[in-house]
Length: 494
Image 1: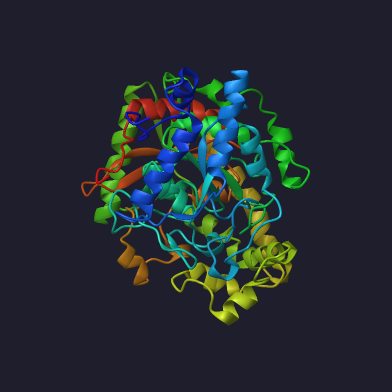
Image 2: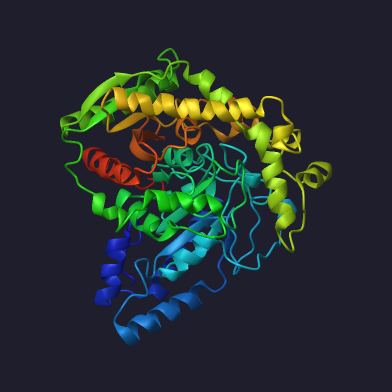
């Protein structure tokens, strides 16, 4: 194992090494644990990991013994060390939801998605940092502190899946799991040079995951390659009686592996709708740089055979504002979850507010404290809910009218901000110029793909969205885009 390189390792390559005997699962886990100690806990101190699994090496030994005895893998994720956002319950590890108020909470059971990954042979290596209850685009956590961007340490890795983003980008695990309500997988993937996937809500069970807007929430894969994201997603999806929303998995009726869709030639003949009013203004220096990076990446897609069609979403910002339900839903949804958990140290947001046990820069959480006890109590609630159906029809109609395969645009209109600017309150969650809300508030699946780097070395991601339940198209087109651009690189300072 001494000569084995874990940086930029893929699932396929790792399992090939397991099969030929050049590594064991134990040696792989040990290598990642050493790297976490060297990079996350010391050295550059990314501060992305909250809790390491105390039985990770025992699990590795169990998998090694199974393979030695049978010559077979337990499942498709045999030996894969996964880093999981600490929003998702794990019985072997404390789960804090990023909140100091929930320090020490030990769930009685694994979340369904964790059970599914374990059944496929994955090892949950550690739990990753997030802003309290996933309420920010930025990596500030009352339990853990601040998480750094591994590409430029003075900048933010994005949120709310900040710890998963920073740790997977820095090769502290093989793949990661985030959670996305308004963009909490895709925005940090954009800021951290990763592939991040948001599925149609309900394809993945939310059982055991703290909510933000319950019908908009979904877990999802975060990885360094499209292939690894597809392999991880295979193990995550499926109907679960514990989450009624997973009837979506029955509707999607996906068969086989998402890797079946991977084809490097998929851009040849594809029609991509470029949402021009999702670009920032060129009067803004940062937006101009993001725009140039995205357009350069799209030129590569065009060279690979894609047709680019300029389109606009009429009154886009008005639709996004009208369909935002954080203020209406989140206090109710979080409180309902906290009250339902046996052994939860703090049972309500009201207690957390009263005790001051939250990170002070989390402006959205502070707004949520003042939300209605019940969503239906807000006079505009049902109008805003109905507006979502109209918004989805509007965006899907653009796809239909222009005979498009997907819509594409910058994931975020600006570069990852400095930690100091966030501390100083220069960025507010509800006004931050992210485009991830388009897919979230139309319930459309989406993938963030690395598009390039700024002159200062900060990553920029492109978002690609398709019609609901068309996840194979995310991977079909996303894989071809990845091959045409090939801009993934490890953080240089490491």
